[in-house]
Image 1 (cartoon, helix red, strand yellow):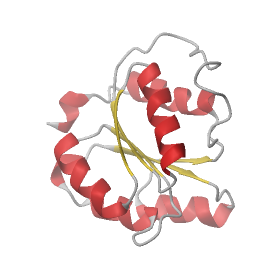
Image 2: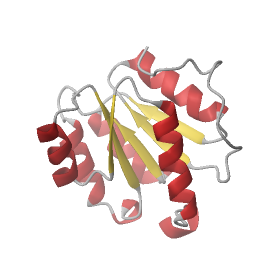
Image 3: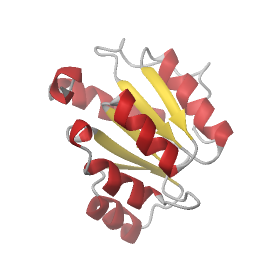
Image 4: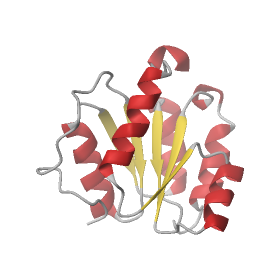
Length: 147
């Protein structure tokens, strides 16, 4: 399924303090939809893409505050997509979260080197993701920073 709890069973620890614009990128369309719907249930505005080029183009117009990005994509991989998005001026303050089946230290280092801010291993622990989003709110990450 791609996440550890179903959207129906997951209850956030607190009500969302901020609604983020989130872009979900995963070549497994079912996993992408489940993550998108889960984030929407949590009060976020979410769009999804299933390939790198579509993700980059969508990100330019949608201007997400958070990108949940799979690494093992065909064509452009998640590392390349993150690096390309980091070069876009409107995405300079975007937070990039790898969501991948690859959890070894070498993969975590490679995501860091590519410009990711966080690395989550699939199935994504929704409490860990919620904690990241809460910390973003506490740090003042918001749409105003992405002007």
